[in-house]
Length: 196
Image (cartoon, rainbow, N blue to C red):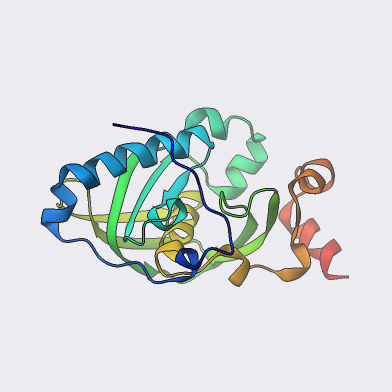
């Protein structure tokens, strides 16, 4: 039965552990198929653009991703262009292998397991991911911009890492201050002001 699951927050050991891989038989099992459906429901209810199994207490190399048009339209055209953000259809990544392409970019990032906070996080601009989908089929994903950031964030969760491990520590702030002061400022200006 599909349900919205509780999202665990930082401090829980499962968020700092390397998740285990799933076998094709496990992926196709009713239990994992139900877990995937519940993870999509949980991610959408939060709302978020990605959710990894460790965030709901399951130490499995499994994540769901979806960046909806209605999330993107809340940003300004400049922010959308700067982040190379386009809608991403719902999909599942299992046992992912991540390859980072040369070239980094920095933007604010948040996490459902660290509610109420955000920070600037450097990430690769482009990535490729080899993984299995929800039918245990091999898939290769090429991603750029915001989609590449989402993939890196979720795969970090499967390795026991959080964005706070990669963040520019001087940029760490509460979500309310981000919304009130920094949200509409170009990232280069934010970095300059926070580095002084």
